[in-house]
Image (cartoon, rainbow, N blue to C red; front, side, top):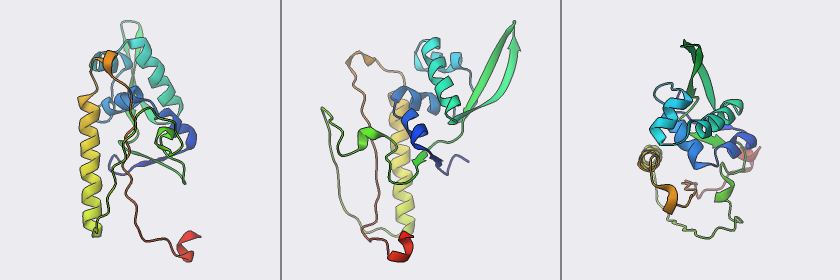
Length: 167
């Protein structure tokens, strides 16, 4: 389930354009948690995390897996539907990554490699692990000096599609 990216709509992709929501999803991958548990792990207010969990749930990116009664209160446990997400079509999963976004600060790193199919899968997995490490590393941070950045890795074949493949 988590190895294969979930294809998302444009509306769902917009929900992923927020670093806190990405951090929330990262907390809901391995084990279902309540919004209060996620808030404690991330050092955020429970109300703020609950708001974003509701948005992610309504958008179909996380699911409600269990409800427990605890002292007259219903605890809702959520789990992410995927670890990775792909946008459908040519739309970027994060509009900040579009070339026309007027960013204050941007870095483009680019190179070409000859890759076998196995190497292509290996490099994708290494980039996933690298990005996951940084999500964890920045999950609980002093945000007073931090700016939000969008980081995307695009691996594109230099070979163009044939006419048959474009249909």
